Length: 66
Image (cartoon, rainbow, N blue to C red; front, side, top):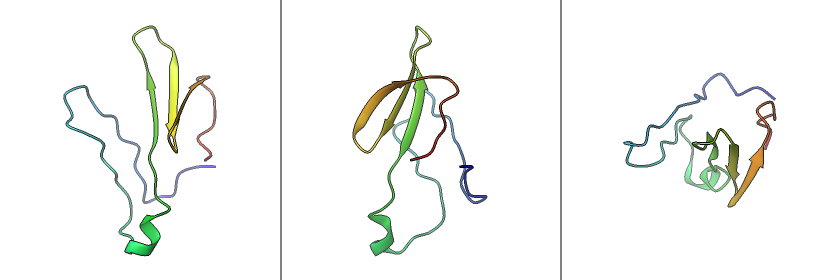
């Protein structure tokens, strides 16, 4: 599933102060369904995925579907 056109994939650097959530403006009642999908590589090259409170090891080619 590709990202919607109004979404952006952004890389954070170690100096960044926190998580940036970029996307369309939402009403308060819709924001309950928004959560971050985060992927990173550790210093040994292992790929990780965080979503909905769970961190798991992933393959490089694993899809982004929620």
